[in-house]
Image 1 (tube, rainbow, N blue to C red):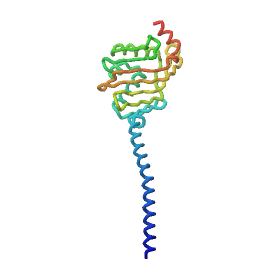
Image 2: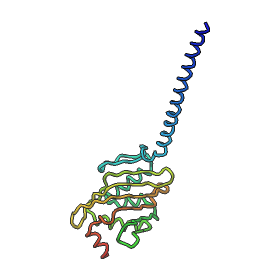
Image 3: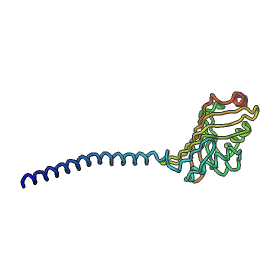
Image 4: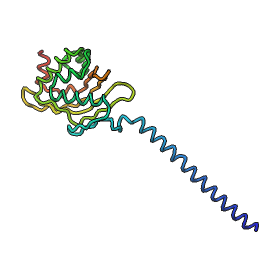
Length: 200
């Protein structure tokens, strides 16, 4: 009888030991799941369906108003639609090209009228303006929207292709775009346009 009791007790200890092992394995697994969940939340700006991702010019809609606004701006620039751009930007919009060689220290224009002059000059320089492989990310912490993409442009004066890579930082205020900051490789600007800029 005592032997049977001890045997049952040993079995009980084995079960307790096995349960402890299972618990020790389960705790790290739970912590890992929690960590991955928090990490996915932090990186939601990269994986959220609100992110607008375009491959080879095919742009799919994002959910947020800011991304829809930015998508409309891209389409308006590609269509050279200055009236549509006017509707999307604020009256005192700021447009910057920090790496432009046209002016020392880059280009900065302020106000809708100056921005219109800038866009009209760009529209006259290219017979085709098209952006491909576009990725748009929306910041969760402020009103910034970041665009990455490639240009598929054609120079109007000689019909030569012009392809650069771009990063745009935009700020949206009260449903309109208040800042457009454009980064690109100035070494890839077509020589004919560089000469025109220096002579103007």
